[in-house]
Length: 131
Image (cartoon, rainbow, N blue to C red; front, side):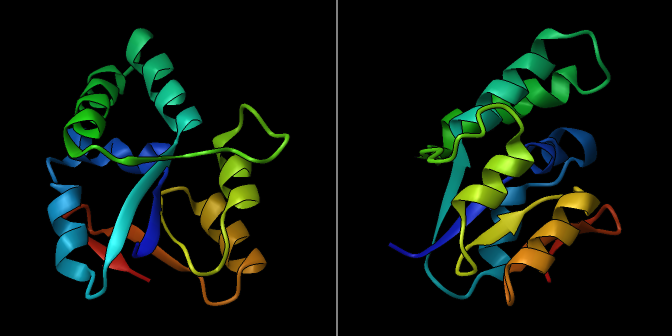
């Protein structure tokens, strides 16, 4: 088993929003073994977005399709938090993980809680970067 890379909901919307292959980009920037992972609550959040009339409806559908195609590893939520995915991520990871997110508030919380935690994020709406 390699480094656990946890994908946040908004990160999974990138392929639909910006036509970027996040899986190829991750493969290009990682020089160590890794496992792509999501929480079940992320799938639920994407399903909710896909069912609503919103600007991200189609992007969420693309994300759900990619989750099935790429066979991402599902992580168990061991915290009492059951609905807010940012809190679920904060409660269930450690500094050895890598988190993929676009959420500025989550990035700040992650950096404050986990010294040395790495984050993969979208740069210039064109490519991913490990920061």
